[in-house]
Image 1 (cartoon, rainbow, N blue to C red):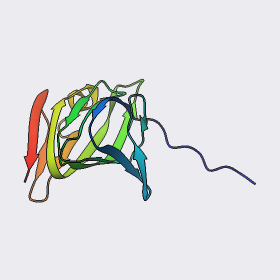
Image 2 (image 1 turned 180 degrees about the vertical axis):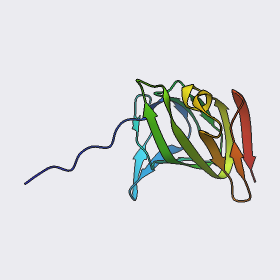
Image 3 (image 1 turned 135 degrees about the vertical axis):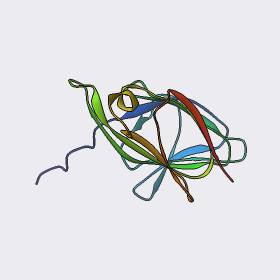
Length: 130
């Protein structure tokens, strides 16, 4: 019998307030500081919820109330300091200070909303989906 390989950690929850969870493969995991995040995780906050996230490429995210944000794709080569990062904002708000991935190449970091796709080139931005 072989164990399935664990997905690589892409970041960690640094802070959380109110109702906040991570949906992973159909399971709702409660959020506390230190919880590891994996590609494909969905960050969910309630009316009073907020989360602070730190990723391994030094990207920082602040997830606002009533949000549903999927960490759709995250690949990072620590040696070359390059990669790709796709986040999908279904609803709510997301504040970002981009890290090494966004600086590694044009459109290396993207944010998808229900109506648009944003290529990240700057270092700080906010996305709100109503």
